[in-house]
Length: 213
Image: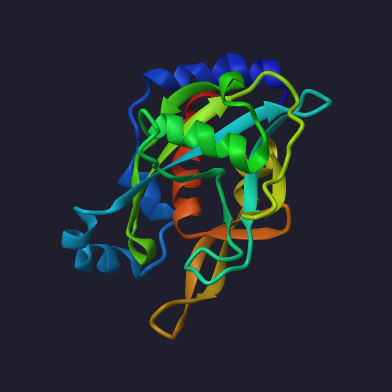
């Protein structure tokens, strides 16, 4: 989809109600609801993070979404695909500033070039005890991405139509913290399997976009 067409249509989601759990449930691992219930009290004191679903035109003016592949490290999100973003810092005015700052740090997109269109439903992540606040933003130019080598293994430029294509919603088998493997819904994007919290947030963004495109 040409970016001009996309940018003219996507602003309509400002007036849409969020789908929240209705969308999240479609891409949720089967064990997640029980895990979230068990951690309900702990969630009240969760750390907070802001992430950015950033759409932009490529050199042919086709609409893309940027995701990142995180580095391999000793942590629950090691080597997983996610949005640019990260933990709220005391110097951030709010979580949208967090998302913009982290996007600039991780992929090199200057914060003052991003037009934030909508705040998406927050999502609690039990394994890391984070409440993640996603934002949908646009930049009207082809970015020159600069990868933050310390945290980002790769930058994934996902074509909008691949993201919206139902054939790229799959079921995959993944290991869990319970030492068992389970089948979970996922997106297959740019050769990577995207599941868990990122897939759940992407699911709501996809449902919103399909209302206006």
